[in-house]
Amino acid sequence: MAEPPRSLLRSRVGRLATRLGNVILRPIAERGWIGPWAVLEHVGRRTGRRYRTPLAVLQAGDRLVIPVPFGLGTQWVQNVLAAGGATLHWHGRELAVEDPRLVTWPEVRPLVRRPLRAIVWLTRVRDMVSVRPQDPAAEREPSGLRD
Image 1 (cartoon, rainbow, N blue to C red):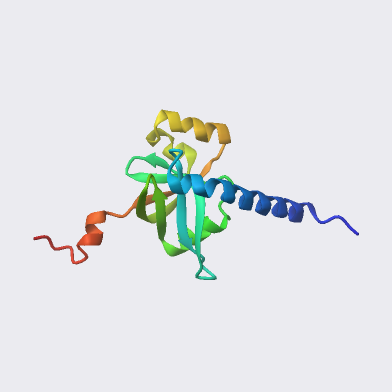
Image 2: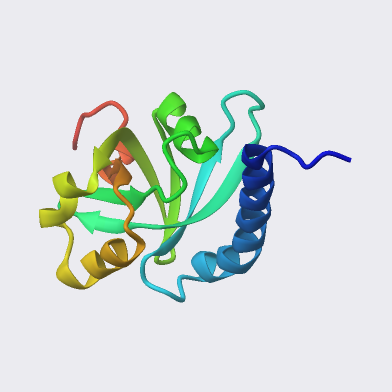
């Protein structure tokens, strides 16, 4: 039997690594045991199914930055961009996030605290998704009127 093409082999290894990583990281991220880990809840743009993806989140000014180690074609990235937002479970809170933007590390580096910069430096991730937490006051007061 012929050997599968290298790209197919890589994608199989990548999917296996992702599944294994999700099994290990999701409980850690959901419980908030390790600072930057969070769970991103997003809806599949084709299936409409809800997904929960563990990932790292960095505070960058008034926005949150999510490193994208496996490339911008990653399903969660495409789903969040298509939907215009998602829900982030981080530090025991549920945050609705919106206004997703593709950014690069040099753009957001000055906004990230020094200790967390080391994570990005060590992993050499350059692509990021920047999101803005929704204003909780806007959710409570949909009419925009205040008493």
